[in-house]
Amino acid sequence: MSEPRYQLLARELSAAIAGDRYPAGSMLPSEVDLASRFGVSRATVRAALDILEHRGLVQRRRGAGTTVLKPGDHPGFGQTIGTIEELIQYARDTRRIVHSVKTIIADIELADRLGIAPGSRWLRIRATRSVPGTRERPICLTDTYVLPELADVRQRLANETLAVCDMIERDHEIVTESIDQQLQAVLVPREAVSLLEAEAGGPALRILRRYYATDGRLFEVTDSLHPADRFAYRMSVTRARRLDHGETDS
Image 1 (cartoon, helix red, strand yellow):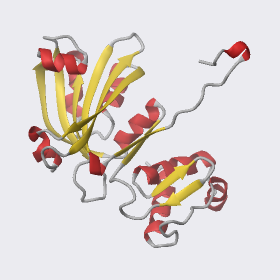
Image 2 (cartoon, rainbow, N blue to C red; image 1 turned 90 degrees about the horizontal axis):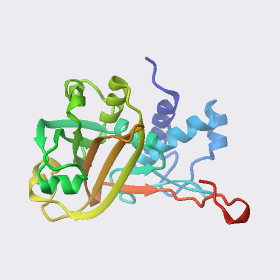
Image 3 (cartoon, rainbow, N blue to C red; image 1 turned 90 degrees about the vertical axis):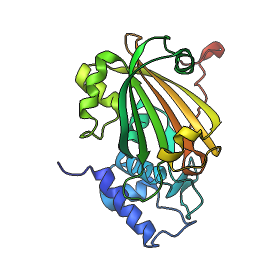
Image 4 (cartoon, helix red, strand yellow; image 1 turned 60 degrees about the horizontal axis):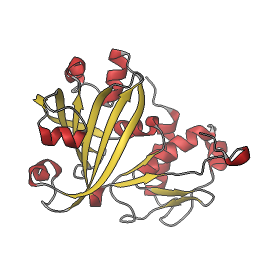
């Protein structure tokens, strides 16, 4: 299978940045110019720029263009989330290393943290993620919890690069309808030090995500820990379009 054009474009632009064709502080050409120069659509250009931004090579601002960053201007990895598809793309842009897979029974503390029933049984997948092609330390440690009836996903972890929810959707005809997300500033616990290659007590960001199917069922929960110096989270917020009589378009 040939490599998608947006990935080819991202690689070419990365090489141009590394070769100082676009030095730190300079602006990349506009989306229109890049699309014309490389003979691709603007959607392809945007997808390529997403990859560069995820890698911390550039920063995009609406109406101000795309700026090339210098080393140290950006944490090791950035995540921009606006849709479920962008969330899943994050998994595709990083490399998963599975450390353990086991069935657990949720005690009261875990159930309260994850928002699940005490005594319920879940498959827990413990993994770290890193950026492909780099020797950087892991950007996160994630515990993924899936329902027991979906536990056959464990058989594909070693050979699949897809996100766990992607594999579940494909193999069980489940569609992710919504994802609830909670962010919390925490300290790196001692039990995560070895896998994260981080210092105990260092600042970190914990992201808890709860995945719901179209029938309202909670089928997956992820609990991710990101050391503060290796990760940045970006979110775009827009004003709702106003209709007549002060109503909003929901």
